[in-house]
Image 1 (cartoon, rainbow, N blue to C red):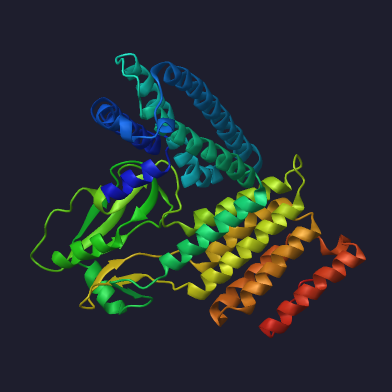
Image 2: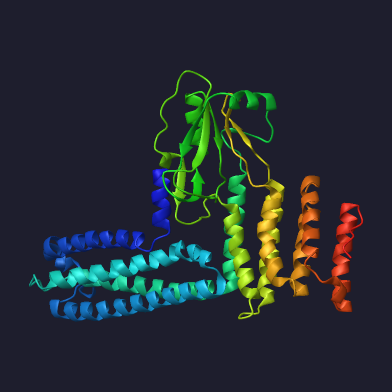
Length: 436
């Protein structure tokens, strides 16, 4: 789990890949210089003249290329700062993670770092030799052409990411993959129900506590480690949190009961729990959906007044909740390979996902009938493809949304438009909705 935490920090930072590229640049410069000093003098007669460059021309070339790559780097950093400002003010500060985690952004900065260090080292070493034929300028030109290609790619990439619809699509696709991963098959058992009497017998035993070693958000849980540890020590664990919750230092995050005589000390909690300063999308479906909610709320603000973007977000949230409804299993109990209970951990209920997805949009968009209609239409589509238990949750939540609408003062066409979708709900549920 320490490796996972390190990988998360590296993934979210701008410095990791540029440092890797910088080290590779130093190695590449050393190798090319070695070729110039030892190999080129011996085989210069066999190398085409176009690949060899004199020292004076090389100095001029390196000086020009250093200026060029610094210019590209400056423009790229300025573009990144503009993107960060745009995301914070117009989209969602949480969506900055998606831009920062993009491989293209980090690789572009890495290529610039590689090119600058490579050219600088070659220029510095050029003053230490009187060799007439050099092979390194040819490689430097190739590297600069590659850097120019990455610069063009980054400009195109930034233009795409500045479009709110593109960002919404990226978040939607990543969340869809997270839903599939969360509810995929595991090596351990997952159960919705367990023998109640056995649970009561376990809780009557002496209970021990595992406390959080630092304050922060629960970013990731290593279920495999926890279940294996509980199996090896013949114990049952009970989590007091859900992924995405904030826990203060010293708070109880796990209770455990020993069922046998063996009781090894639990290793450092970084092995089974990642606690960080902010929420991430490693295992937190709700956080990924909340990014779309924030974009929708920003679009509904009086300063932006862009209800169509909010409606787009509602449609994407609807698609995600539909996928979630198709995969959702209210797993609470986890067992080992022998079928013995090893961990108890409550999951978020589907109605919690519904509430977190729409309650803020409902609050800020209740005066815009197009937004209200889109929410109800989204709920109808979710109910249409879901099982009976989830349909019941969606129907109840639909009534909550309608409570915010001043139906008596709606214009006639708005009233009729809303009435049509509500009647669809009534036919689907088989009951009459008293929405008036």
